[in-house]
Image (cartoon, rainbow, N blue to C red; front, side, top):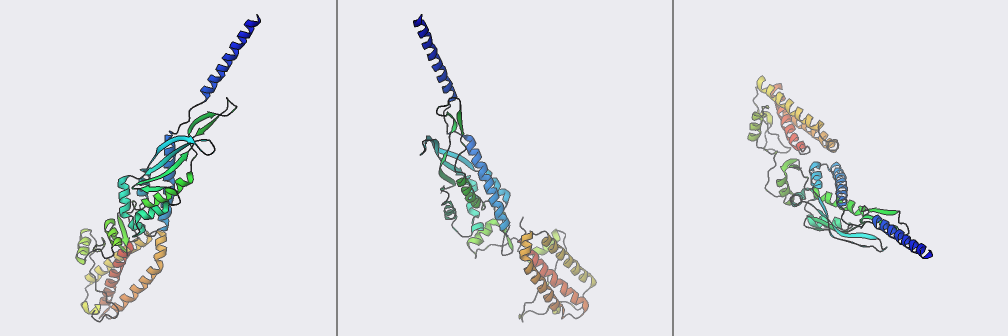
Length: 357
């Protein structure tokens, strides 16, 4: 009888042990370094940091040469991947995923970035400029790929020692976030070249960006600004666009004895029709410059205001001086209007360089 009881007890103990072991096995899941969500999380962090960086740059840069949307579109195309991934132990004997993090800029984007970088950083060597910024982040640059040895916690759950019912879960979300922020700033700075607008201003003149790059790399490059038109071309453009045709009067320069007074180049008798046309041309030019000034960026307008006030005073003085030698009041008004219109149109060309689109 006792023997039977002993056997039954032994069987029960073995069954309980097996059940407990089965429970522990079921509660344990293998750790994994395969975590697609981590790539997505890092990509979002990069986009956010790049967006903040490029907005700050545009606010500081009075040239207005960067299209923010283009930079953000390029940031969206970044590819985040991991290579050489292996599960191992860290110095504290905790499970860790060792890998190489790769952030790849699309080849076409990277090529355009390098092409137009001189418009942002000048003649500085682009590759050296970027590598210098990477020194503190631990990333390296190879062609269009930013890489770094990278560790993160594995995905899965494990049983705590001595407690089969209380698993500790790891979500694979622990990694060096500061290095991601640092490299994002560097990548954002690099992508500014990609974001350069189609039209840029140099010295108050508009150039397409290809010609602008040539001019930055070689100040003697034979390129023509897009807003530099011959008088015949300006007249043709005015006729085609239904605008009043402005007939310029040569503006004499101080101490230039070879330039005759404008009054001597205008007939004594100025018809009412010719005078009214001069008035219309002048009103048109001043309306254009006023709209341009009002619609200009506040920061740029504030910077240019002292220069603008000086130009207004110079225009008034110069045009009054030209009209002073007129033979009669009609001729004086005509000369003053022509002078004012020409100087205003020249100023419009200059200010257009600060209003890129």
